[in-house]
Length: 330
Image 1 (cartoon, rainbow, N blue to C red):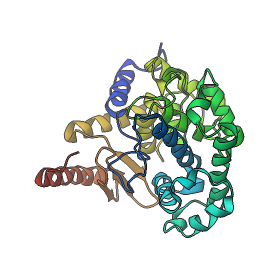
Image 2 (cartoon, rainbow, N blue to C red):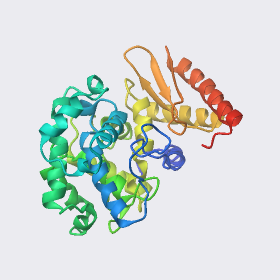
Image 3 (tube, helix red, strand yellow):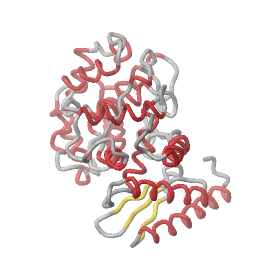
Image 4 (cartoon, one colour):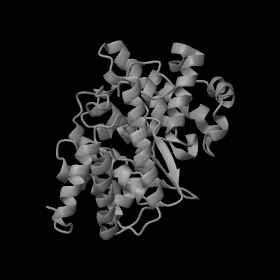
């Protein structure tokens, strides 16, 4: 099944994915600020209907060129809800959004395409109101497969289309997969999802020989990576999404080949054995940064990869000591 990949690498990769597939997405992790105005895992129908709409707004702007850091998408939609309340779901005039977005405290931290945010959000609401009659759950049941709904979202919501519909597949992952995702479109099967193929995940795919290059990403690349993920986890291929992102971020600036990939998995494994946690390591313009997704706010920096790993060990130890000292529930 994996004829071109060493069995040891496949074993390590499976273990890594299993270890890191339960991390809650930062867009709805209840431990992170700002506090969300909705309960993501609410059981009643009206709440779930609003949740599906709310996170389509989040997903629509969750793009580096538009919003900058992913956490800015969470912050912005929560801030707009604070300003507009339930009316946030009814605004179809981008000018109404524009004033509040421009005055957002983080506006200067958004991406170079931030001027498009009002139009993007207005297009989401027009789609939900006009095409879905205000109910995305009921609307989703018009389709037998997630891919059909993704195409429609991409057609109507600004910047959610394109050759790979990346943001629409991120949204569909949230809506279809069980916890730690939201499982709101419950008639869809997770096994029919496709990987939201980012450049970080593409680095993993290049190392494994699944695709040739990180850029440009084509739909055929999405199919190849998803096919590989289905061989690993037939019932839930998108289980690899976040774990592959962790690996791919660590691979930035490195030679993308099988040897580098194996060395990276070994480093992850060594760090996990020392601390009990996996981390996100990013090569910055100067030095490295690291954070522990399972411990919100546990971040550090270092001049070299070795230094940032050492600093991260100490940061995790200090974080856990504070948790124990103050009896904080993790």
